[in-house]
Image 1 (cartoon, rainbow, N blue to C red):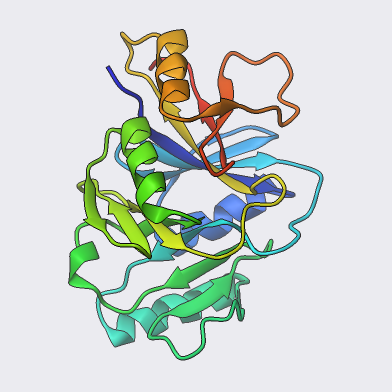
Image 2: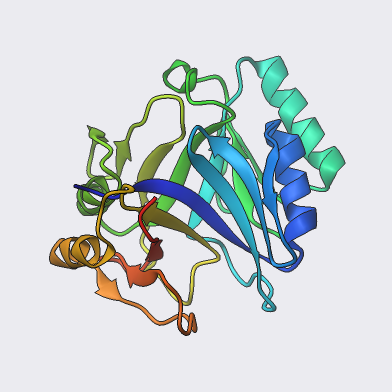
Length: 236
């Protein structure tokens, strides 16, 4: 048994408005909605989930999304559509690069990549990108957490791959994590799995329990070896 990647969760001051932005930009439907949570389809069996929080974004996110494009013209069209929906260009120190760095209406950074053939089958989101002190070690941990294979490995980056869905990529940075992440991943055991067993397995891989003020909930909040919070949900 193992857990699998289930959703990317985004803290939002206005979940409905932010979900609408991403739904239109990605061309993906809203698949669930309540006052405090809105879910947008990310890939088959995976969601981009926006949950209400009171605090506003402060500083660069440690996780972000990279979007696919099929040509220079398509890249420009995606950027223009994002700006029309309320995104803005931002400088995170990227210098002269072939991709475009934007921030959504609540300031969450994302990139619109130039055409890259390796992402052609991934859908509108090419990758979920995680800042990492040790990309290889992080990839090894998250391979165990998601069941996805490590397909690229280098001192400065590492990638996990899935068919018809975003890759999970780890990119070396010098800065350690500080404060609670505004984006995090949730994993889930299979319907016939066992939550305590999977939590124990992930703890053996290097995860630790984390308190983000979750109170009494049916899922378990952990942090990976570099402190990135994630949730292990109930089997489904």
